[in-house]
Image (cartoon, rainbow, N blue to C red; front, side, top):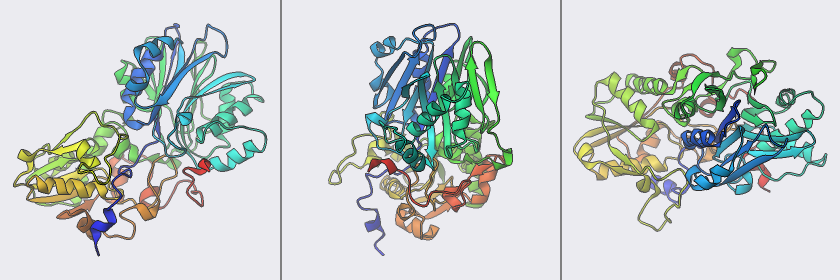
Length: 484
């Protein structure tokens, strides 16, 4: 079989799983402007989404319902100039960075969403994916709803607004809306006088609470709190709704919570998505990746001269492999820090590949050596093929690839951009076949059984590896459902 033909023409497709977004909220009880803190908090979450970003703020002492919002395509430092931030005056606000998994990459789909309705305004930022969004959207359309976006986040916003008409508070409306929506979501909602955070009952996506002086924060990751000098208070529990206000501080509603053994955290938060300096539900991401590397060394040992990681998320696992195996850890790649997930990719006829634009090999480090290369995943195989080739071009004597996750065999419907099975390199292929396809001397994956160990027993979702999902998946691929 001509393995290389299977890789041709795939280079411009995403080669890493994409995460839907990062969310951040702030409420300064002393009335100070929160937009700078939101900006820097989002900057720490930029790895979670690089297609679009936005910030919405309101002045709780000003006219009720007045919200200032700026959002656009691009990175934070491209969208938010000092002049724009200066105009975003308000003591309560929400922010968002986006990577699209449901809904196209357009300005209309940028968040936060701001809704004006009978009871006032809502600003909403959402991380995750709903599996019943098409059904709920059709129901809303048949009752007169007009949608401005193609994202499922707008379905959530509409349901909260509608429930608010028949409830005594926004947080009650959020709880009732949670009874209707199914899937993965971490939400931050700004009402005229309250900041609300909510996490789906299974806990797919992370959300935490922070505090600095008299300002409270909600964030996707603890690293965002560190960036702005805030103290970590605690994680929002799966299914929990927290309401933050000057009158009552933090109020918790656990009516939507389920038993802890039924939780299903996305294990890829620990393997790839989150920054290594983040802790999720009490588990250090850095430590989790070190463990993954150690288990790879135990289960897939090989004689070599140097262990290297593919930046950034492969580095910690490579260190873990080195610590366990005794083989020296080193650096083989220089990463271009100014290239994000989205950039103008070279055309197929160009000599530059998108991989070479992002990474270059340190020839002095690898020439004449047997290399163990650790990466967090193999999706389609296009990147692994090119990186292995780059190492060989630089003089590597042998290249042994180790992967700190099991093979992707099934798509994800909960906010991770794992594609259809037919596009996954591991679908209908053995590890030996994949090893030949990417040109490595050997290939080893993390065993599925090790996933529980790298999160120290926390209940996780492993659907993309096993096909066993914590919620029944839709009968068809729902991503992009609203585009037609």
